[in-house]
Length: 372
Image 1 (cartoon, rainbow, N blue to C red):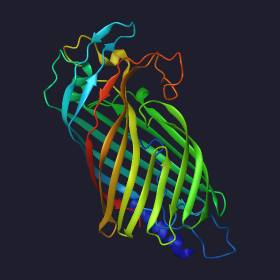
Image 2 (image 1 turned 90 degrees about the horizontal axis):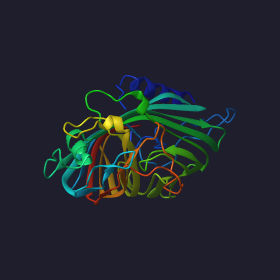
Image 3 (image 1 turned 120 degrees about the vertical axis):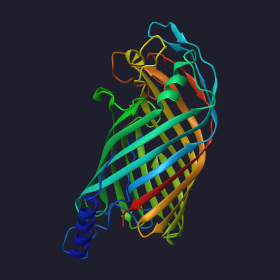
Image 4 (image 1 turned 90 degrees about the vertical axis):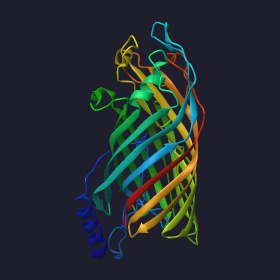
């Protein structure tokens, strides 16, 4: 017990000396990291045992991650942009994007690491720049103009609380606040913050398996949704194969070559709602006055290779295919978010603009400081 306590205390002191910055494009909304923590078990049978926050063979958690994301060529076909009264502001013409790229920085800090409670704080920053084949002019659709001139970015903070109830059962809560949009050097007003949360109850029946069920409030497919979520992490008896899943957000099959080399196959949903905040000269109206937001959601089918460079410094290389799920522009009526339940609720306002994107291949590379 003393040994475990010393390891946890040492980790906390080391990590608190690191700087913290903030999702996910995703959103960190329901993006729960289960392998962040050291073994919380006890040797003494007289002391109450609690369910460990991780299982054997799980991929190491990323405490600090600095990376770059690159998408190959694709085209954007915007629809007509309509005002609230139904009048058309601008028509839509297809334009080619040579590439989309940006940096991704994520930080996670254990605040409390005890046998009966684990609390983590995190932050992230993602930036996306659009490199058009031809620079959009004032006569082109406002979507092309704002993406070319300002790009998209998101920054936010998140928190995760893991509360074991006994040797097997646990409750986990995750919440995040994100500011996403076309803002530049000055941040948007805090009224544009997007809040996401997830609550799960689960069990850890063995050292190699844990599962949980719950509900999430998320923007992961671009617009507000309330969805059920299922956690399932499992490692095979020989530690060579495993599953790491938080359905529907992401699902991966893991092949462990050795503890310092792992390969994953699967998918992840990414997305967020981006405020079109910046004004564009010559457009004839201010985007900020129109209360417009880009509902961006995508599916990334991918292969990932993660390996140790030296000790706890790891590299992650992923390559795959980005499939557009949604890239429509919505208008907030009287301010609050519109809940469509995946478009199934009748009577909700029409989108201000319906857009189409073709699907490119992408590459993402990052260097990470992982948990011991």
